[in-house]
Length: 311
Image (cartoon, rainbow, N blue to C red):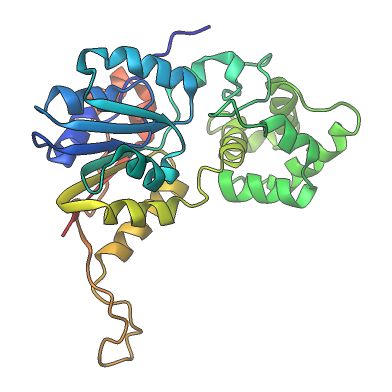
């Protein structure tokens, strides 16, 4: 089994974005190996950290990584979208800052038995971040309708051949159920015309789509961002790292709504909605990794960081 290792992406940019202060309360909703969390505790005096993660392997590694700060952190095996319950249980009313790193960890990708990588042919089609949940990638492939599979591949993977791939999955599962990564990679390779396989592995989008569906990564994300921003103290910061356009679009839309001072139709001369600006957007354009960071950690190349401040 691979050791839990995860290089925190945009680490310095995140710390600057949080505007860390001593004796604060911070929330890390996607703890992972605690790379960002450790820096929050290291750079502050007396600050308290509350964190969540779905992956029990990550939580075990994080506890060890944060051991020198014992007494200053609490970790919950929970989805960050349940942060209201977690913060209430931790006795934290308002936050000085919060961070969400929406990507999956290097450990999850590199550990073949987790089934996240299309390059591990013998890996089981699992893809669960929380291995206590029942639904796996194989369950979706073997049980969902052609229409639902098409929707997953199209909406979550932005795959142009979604319908054809879904139809072939349904046809082949009648002969043999999908069990291993190679079962799905072969379908994608056979269905997508060769001329469309020149811009990187064609399986990448399909595996991304399936992972998002298994873990319901996008469901409730918009509402969570709104609620999390409203849990911040004045001048508290929310920093969010996304890794694909679907996530980034949701983050940007949520920030724009929170920052809006009125959402009335433009043809109404006087505001009747009562909506007032709740945040200011610190960086209108997303912050991306430097060439130096990408050289050290190629997985940082698609990362986008957006920062908002409560007003």
